[in-house]
Length: 210
Image 1 (cartoon, one colour):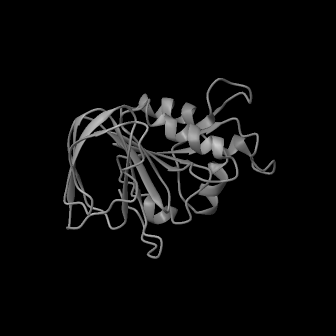
Image 2 (cartoon, helix red, strand yellow):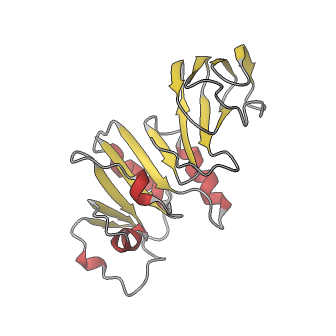
C-alpha cells in the first residue's frame, strides 16, 4: 500500500501524479481538503490545524478528520506523515510541499526525508528521495542530482559524469546536474546516505512519475 499525502503548494498535474490503486490511501493535509474537493479527488483522511482554510468550508462535512492545535511542535505535514506511518505502508509519497513563498517550509519538508525511510516528495518538476547502501537503478529523462547527507562513497554507471568509488563529502555539490547517457543508470552507495533529486531539463517540461 502507498499512502499519498497532498499538501500546499499543490501540484498542477495532480491527476497525473496521483496513481492510486484500490489498496492505496490519500491524506489531505490542511487546506488540501478544499483543493482536492475542487479537483474532484476523494480522500480517506484529513489532518491539520486548518487555520488557512476558507472559513466557508464546512469541516463537519468530513467523516475522517483530525484537527490539530495551531500552536504545536510539529508541522501539519509532519503530523500527516506520522499518521501515515501508523498504516504500515510500503511507501509514503508527499505530493506538493515544495516551493511557495515560505522557503523555510520547503527546507523543513526536505528534512523530513531524513527521518522517514519510506518517504518521497514529488511535485510537477521534481521527485526527491533518499538512498542508502546498495545499488539503485535509475530511469529518468532529466537531471539526476545527488547530494550526500553524510560523507559517502558512491559509484555511478550509465551517467554522463561517472564516478568510481568516489568519496562524496556532505559539503560538496559535485553531484548536481548529472544525467544519464543510456536508457538507465545505476547509483551504488558503498557507504553513507544520498539525497536524490530528479528534475526536468530546463527546456523540456516532462512530468516526473514514480
